[in-house]
Amino acid sequence: MIDWIRKNRQSIARFAGSLLALVLLVVLLKEESGQDIASAIKSISMSYLLAGVVVMLLSRLFVVERWHVLLRSAGLDITFWQTAMITFTGLFSSNFLPTTIGGDVVRLAGVMQLGYDRAICLASMVADRLIGMAGMLVTLPFGLVPVLSAGGAGLQSGFFAPLFQKGLDFSKRTFGTFGIWFKKPLALFASLMSTFGNMFFIFLAVFLLVSGMGRHVSYWLIAGLWSFTYFVTLIPISVNGYGIQELSLTFLLFKFGGLSQSESLAVAVLIRILFIVTSLPGAFFLPSILAAMNKKKIDSQ
Image 1: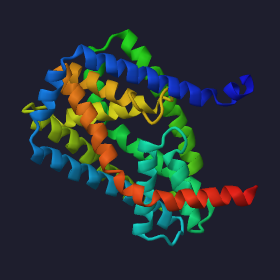
Image 2 (image 1 turned 90 degrees about the horizontal axis):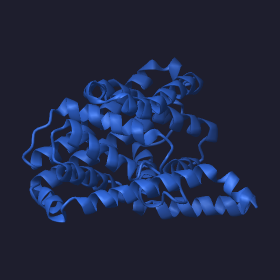
Image 3 (image 1 turned 90 degrees about the vertical axis):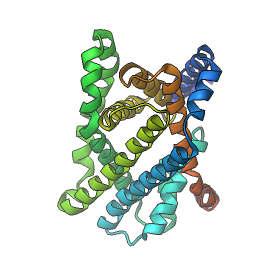
């Protein structure tokens, strides 16, 4: 038992972090009037909600394109449809199967199922993550300025020490990963543009939900606050950012966006729902990938 705990201490810590964050989220929900939260959600017209779904789906397509560019530029003869199928399956797995199968594991299994080189596939996935982080770094200052101007030393030390370490790790991994793509700057540029497309539509989804409540928050402030939330969820204290994302975004929109706590919480929960809903196409492709993973496991025994 002790050996098992030692081997899985990181996963246990993430589960504990997610559980604690979700408990805090439940406490926050109880403290807020359920009627206030329901009213905040009901104040958003169906047209805004549908627009949010469409906009979030467009952001997912840019995620597909970002990885597709990297795979193609690495010499893999993969179609956009195949990349989309595998990417949406990974997104679905991250949302619905975070306890046993990570989205990246499913993506790797899916692309290897097509017969492509494992090392190149792994490198492309790491590059995909790093380019996503690089894009978020561009809009992070729009969130850092209000946070730094209002936050005390405790807030800064609590958040920025892990973020600084993430930045160091990011720099180290970047030069070790981009060996293939440094020789293909156009592919890197196209992938980065896809990241900006993904970010634009995520920020727009939040902006639409806030606007649907009859409140106005600057698009660029939303961009900065979401980027800040993104980097907070990268700290390995939860599974897939569950709970942490919602708490962070609720706090930031309430503290710096001028929304009420009920409105902020409603937006944070709705954004999570939009991510889940737009990952549902992956459910159609997951069984075949899981079957391939299981077959490979059996064959290796």
